[in-house]
Image 1 (cartoon, rainbow, N blue to C red):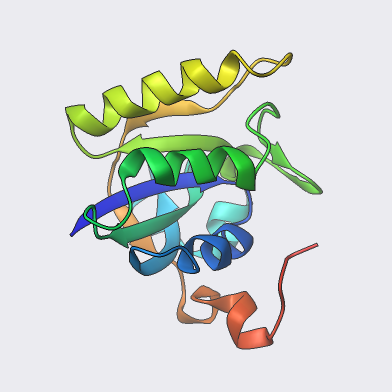
Image 2 (cartoon, rainbow, N blue to C red):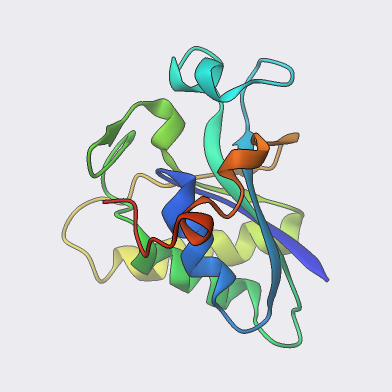
Length: 153
């Protein structure tokens, strides 16, 4: 098994979409790459903790590759909007790939470059090493699924 960590706006919608991909074993939503220890949702929402809302994906690389997950990421959100996805605005909603190791870093860089060649707007997706992942509160986990919803908006 392997881990992927992505930020793509509100974590509810991307969690649902990634959880439906063949080869994805499990997903968790949470907060990463900020400067406050053990942040809470209300704290992250202020934008003062530096954290992004993220999805942590456990996947089977024999069934789905890391590159395939990144390809899905490009489709599931707008990588050209800085600190915003739809109506959600703030640095906690930034677009980012938080890599686990050099191989993931290189795949992410190559994928961003290839995807940029297909777009007229500049991709603003950050590619940075993954920091500590703090799971979001229980009510956020599988939120849309529990509510019987297909999307956030």
